[in-house]
Every structure is written in structure tokens, then in C-alpha cells.
Image 1 (cartoon, helix red, strand yellow):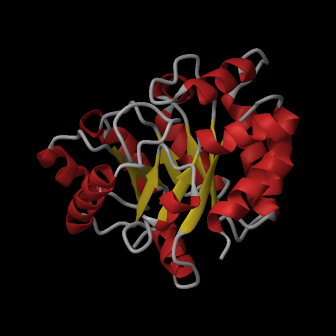
Image 2 (image 1 turned 135 degrees about the vertical axis):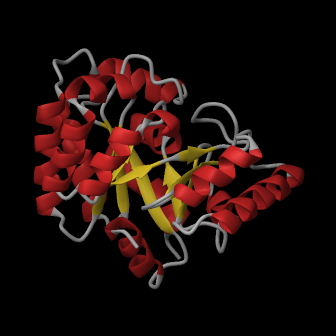
Length: 262
């Protein structure tokens, strides 16, 4: 079991499901994004997924796309981003930060360099949604060497054989996209869709030894409750950003408490 998977297993002994919150680095400013991350960790979220912005974030819906574009109006660079994440990791040694971006900026930085630097700053997981596992041999080797988990994604439309392959090779945790399409709007309301979701997650669970995180479209407490016993992590992205945009940090924290507190 990897360090990240072990952390999840230990935390799951205390909670029925863990929380992972998504933040875009540099939105609306670097300092404000770091303040927001600090607040989230102070409030006790189990993970933050920090996105280094990219101009064409193809898996993301309108809210996160807009946040990326605003962030990129500043002069951002990966080295500074990693330095800031290192300080955050040192300040909150009992929490976990997962880094997310798209392949282009991380490829330019260097994937082997990225894995090494992540390990140095106690970042145990990396998410690159547009990097296919078939083209990742060197990246996987670098992650393994540095004890950092590459986090793979599956979706409801991933072909069965590929889904089973990705599930079987997952480490750290497997990111299970709750629906087809981009982040943002929910499609959890219909009973038939919930049944399909349950079957989808059960199929993944039959082939995955790693923990399972579920994201895309989670907006209500009922969505979180529907994952109990079926997943280990519930991931809040667009819903949290929308709350933050409407009412700042207080509105974001209220949403997290409404969704996760007993």
C-alpha cells in the first residue's frame, strides 16, 4: 500500500467518507488562493486538490475554466507553484495536498523533475487528466521511484476493458468521474441515474485495490450520502468554486459543512 493509500485507509477508520476540495492556484490572485487553501486545511478538509491553471482545461466546466483564465492573467510559473505547495504542506503535515494540472505545462517543466520535486515537498499524488497511461511509462517510473502516486481517471463511458485495466493499476486512489462531460452541473437526481452510478462504482470496486474518489457534479448532501459505502473520497470542484464566487471563503466553508458534517 502506498503512502497516500495508507493515509486514506487510516482516515477512513474515523469517517464514512473523506472530503477533497478543488482550488485553482492563482485565482483570483496567488495570495488569495493560498489564503483559501490555508482556510480549507484549518477547517479540517482531508485533501485539497490544487490545480495549476492551463488555458484549455478540457475536463473542466465553465466555472473552473473562467478561474483558470483569470489566474493566467498573472505571471505564474511551476517552480513558484511548487514552492508555495511545499510551504503549505509543511504548515499542515497531517493533511494531504494532491497536485492537478494538464500535460502541457507539466511536460514543459519535466515529468521526472515534477515527481522528484513533489516527493521533496511531501505531495503524494499527481493528477494529469490528459496524459494516457499508455504514453506514461517514464512518468510512472519516476513516480514509483519517488513514491508519488499517479492518479488515473475513469468515467462512465470508459470502455469496460480499459476501465478494468486502469482500476487494476491504480495506486493512491482512483479518480472516478461521476458522469460523462465536464465538471459542474449535477446529473444525480434521477433514480435510474443513481442505479447506473451504483453499478458503475461497484464494477470499479471489483477490479480496484486502491481507494476510490468520486467527483464531477457533487453539489448536495444527498449526493455525498449516496456515495457512502461505495467510495472513499467525495471531491468538490465547481460547486465549491461557485459558492466561493458568490460569498467568499465563508460561503465555501458553509457548503463543506452542510455537505460533510454529521
